[in-house]
Length: 266
Picture 1 (cartoon, rainbow, N blue to C red):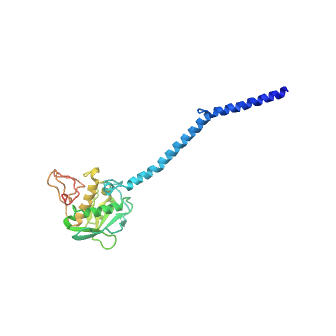
Picture 2: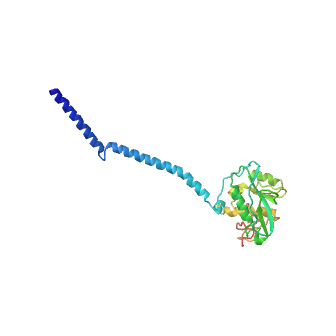
Picture 3: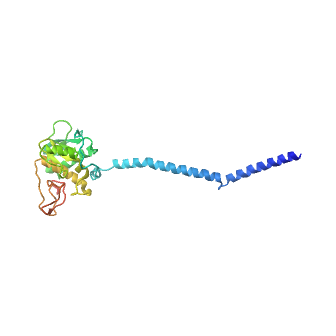
């Protein structure tokens, strides 16, 4: 009898202990709930971090895709001043019809392989710049049409500094001293130095890169159209588009302002 009573008492004690332990575990501040809550918080935090990591690159890509023409033209691109690329060219495909009247010039755009630059932007810039009423097309004097097949009147070529120098040398021109562009008159190529296209020049500065690129196009095509260099003679005036504005805006003590246009007042 005593043995049975002892066993029963022990059983009751065990049941009570289990009940008490269960109640403690269900208390709001209990250790088990605390550990589970912390685990959920950590999981949520990790999910949020991974979510940010996934969406951030997509956001940056979307921002780049939504840049306007003017914003792209005002953006500098990385390109080494001493780069000499493949020497092989790809023609920009497609037709951009001449929008104006007057004598029609048909040109092709070649871009050297390996530059890593936006050839579509370059082609758009050439067509828009040349056919602007402030450019050579002023008052319907002439109009420009981009082609990718057939015989062009000239080929506007975007090339690395090394390749630009090679083609300019064919016409007796040295572009290496100031890393400039040229109209290689002995060939069919108007050479645009990709370093200058990508980085601009100190004469215009980083805030006028769009205007510098317009000047670069108008100046070199101007040579192809038969125009020679002209210097500014009035201090503070806009420099003529045929002045060598990449090199300097201060000639013989006469300092002028940067200008991309043939007819800037139009």
